[in-house]
Amino acid sequence: MCEFISWVKKRGKVYFVTGEQLFSEKGQAWVKEHGVSNDDLCGHGTIRLWHGIDNGDGQDEECTNFSTPAAFPDVIVKAIKDDKMRGLGTPKGLLSEPAWAEYKKVQQQAWAEYKKVKQQALAEYEKVKQQAWAEYEKVEQPALAEYKKVQQQAWAEYKKVEQPAFWNLFAIPENRSPLWR
Image (cartoon, rainbow, N blue to C red; front, side, top):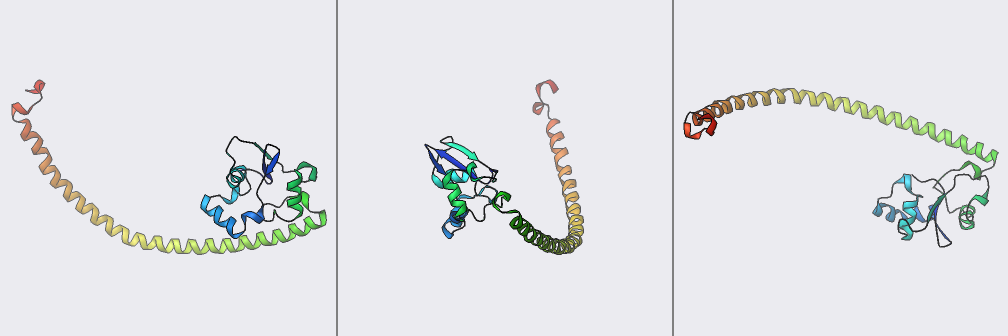
């Protein structure tokens, strides 16, 4: 998985993808069509695919230190400032300390709500799963017993035919392997 922000530099030009591009209706259709995972939305593979750049052509670059815009190409700095990267990451260095504290408060509340909903959904799943498993066991036990009964009868019939067939053929010396005649 590549980091936010990643880009490909090729012949002096910087190639990257924005959230604005990827989360548009056209972008979402493209993401689905190409099977791009959420973990690699802004990765080098996606960038190369989006811009038609062959693997090995150009230089893969990335930076996760947002303490200064100087760490990024100007075109990416402009995209960040123009709010075109929305949805691709939440790097701390872009916000002031008070804004970061506000973000963390909202993020933690959202996380707590997510966990609550997830736990409720998991509890419901477990309940349904246990009911389904109990139902399965009710059906599976008699079915397995019937299968074993039929299988044992079929095995007995097979043995009645299989052993005599072999030994009846063996009883005729011409049918034996030359060393056993």
